[in-house]
Image (tube, rainbow, N blue to C red; front, side, top):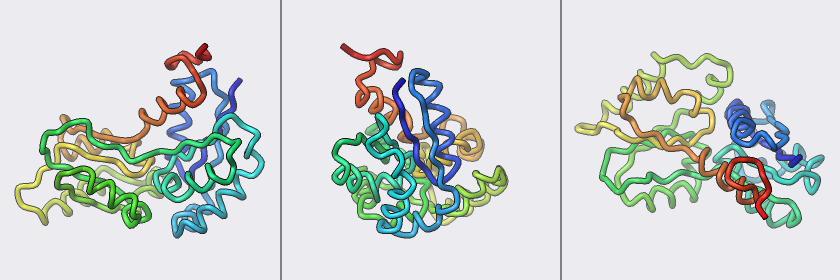
Length: 222
């Protein structure tokens, strides 16, 4: 059985690991969730690489694939580890571009560790459309603890949107893996026809290709 490590700093990693087990039951998923060092990891690229390397040391060159189920970890560490450990395969959760060319109002729900990076700003430029960014750094931890309420989500988003006239988001890009757990609440606040983008599905497709699996059946491609 193929061994795949899912690394993250919170519940988003657990959420993705659950999804991966459902989609590809042939894979043995090893969850490495560093809850304790989340704040240090998100503080800088240097800290992220150092701490993540310590956590992953038992698995480097010992498993079929290591996945960073976190947008910031992908930005901060993916290239570093891919270059240093050439025999080990790595993948990460990437920022998701909208699949429509319509000029719809777009809201990006992010955290500051991601939005302050050069990669994120380049991502926004490539969107080739106006977008607003709402950083909600307190949400991931509250989601991890099961404490984020619909009322708090509504107040945060509507308070932010009140600063912009004639701006009504019809599309949202999620830039934290934990935010996948609040999609129903986002649709309640912004409308049930809201289009939500995240990188989960794209990452699963990349996993099947990297491990040479046929579709999502778990069978090895010839």
